[in-house]
Amino acid sequence: MAQIIDGRAIAAQVRAEVKAAVEAWVQAGHRPPYLAVILVGDNPASASYVRGKTRAAAEVGIASDTLHFDPSISEAALLAEIARLNADENVDGILVQLPLPDHINPSRVLNAIRPDKDVDGFHPVNAGRLLLGEPGFVPATPAGILELLRRSGIETTGKHAVVVGRSNIVGRPLAALLLHRGIDATVTVCHSRTRNLAALTRAADILVAAIGRPRYITADMVREGAVVIDVGINRVDDPGHPRGYRLVGDVDFEAVADKASWITPVPGGVGPMTIALLLRNTLHAAQRRYPYP
Ligand SMILES: NC(=O)C1=CN([C@@H]2O[C@H](COP(=O)(O)OP(=O)(O)OC[C@H]3O[C@@H](n4cnc5c(N)ncnc54)[C@H](OP(=O)(O)O)[C@@H]3O)[C@@H](O)[C@H]2O)C=CC1
Ligand SMILES: Nc1nc(=O)c2c([nH]1)NC[C@@H]1CN(c3ccc(C(=O)N[C@@H](CCC(=O)O)C(=O)O)cc3)C=[N+]21
Image (cartoon, rainbow, N blue to C red; front, side, top):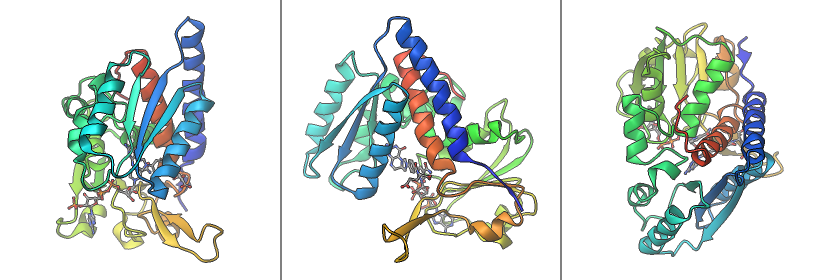
C-alpha cells in the first residue's frame, strides 16, 4: 500500500510560510499584497475555485477582489479592464479564471496581462522563461507538484517522469520544470495521440496524470513502486452525496495505491497546493521577486 501524499497538510505548511512572509512584509511598512481575480460568467466550478482562492488569500493576509463580469462582456471590454489593473500600482497580481466564454480568445486576454503581475504564469514571457530556466512566475499547479515531491523527500534526479497531458496550464509547464537543472528528471510527455500509452506509463518512476478523464489510469498501467501524482479533478454523479456529485481524479485510486510507493488523493492532493502556490506567487509579485521553485 502506497504512502499517501497529504496535499492538504503540505499546502497548510506552504500557506503558513506565506502568511509569515506577508506579516514580515507588512511589518516592514509595505501595504498587504493585492490580487485581482477576474471571473467571467457563472460556471459553478469556476465560481467555487475563485471563492477558494480569495478565502485562502484572506487567511494569509493577502487582499483580493473578484471582478465578476457578465458572460456577454466583449473581449475589448475585458482587455480594457486588464489594462486598468496593469496600470494600477496597488494591484500586484492579476488572475483571469479559465475557461472564458467562447467569444473571447483566451490567449489575447492572457497576453494582455503584465508579465510581472501574471501570478498564474500563463503569459508567453513567463512560459518562455520557464522553458529557458530563467526566473519568472511558474504556474501554480506544476509548482505545487514539485513542492509535494520535494517536501515528501521524493528524489527526482535521473528518474523517469511520465506526464500524461500537454495543456499549457499543467502538462507542458510541468514537463519543463521537471527538466530543470537541480530537478533533473528524464521526461516523457504523453497526450491523446500517443500510441501505446500503457507501455509508457508502466516505464514511469514518477507518473503524473493531467488528463481530465475519471479513473483513466488503471493499475495495469502503473509500475510496482512508482510515485503517482493525480492532477485530475472530475465531477461524477453521486446521488448518495449531498451535492449530487463527488470529485474523482484521473487515477483509479484504490487499485493503483496497492502498487504505488506514493500517491496523491483527490480531493486533498494537488488541488490545495495549486491554491497555496498561487498565494506564494502573489507575495513574490508584491515583492517584485520572480524566483522559480
Ligand atoms: N488540481 C488542480 O489544481 C488542477 C486540476 N486540473 C484538472 O486536471 C485535468 C487536466 O486539466 P488540463 O490540463 O487543464 O486539461 P486539458 O483538457 O487542457 O488537457 C488534457 C490533456 O490530456 C490529454 N488527453 C486527453 N485524453 C487522453 C487520453 N485518452 N490519453 C492520453 N492523453 C489524453 C489531452 O491530449 P491532447 O492535447 O492531444 O488533446 C491534453 O493534452 C482536469 O481534470 C482538470 O480539471 C487542472 C488544473 C489545476
Ligand atoms: N486562471 C486559472 N488558474 C488556475 O489555476 C485554474 C483555472 N484558471 N481554471 C481551473 C483550474 C482548476 N484549478 C483548481 C484549483 C484548486 C482546486 C482545489 O482546491 N481542489 C480541491 C477540492 C475543491 C472542491 O471540493 O471542489 C482538492 O482537490 O482537494 C482544484 C482545481 C485551478 N485552475
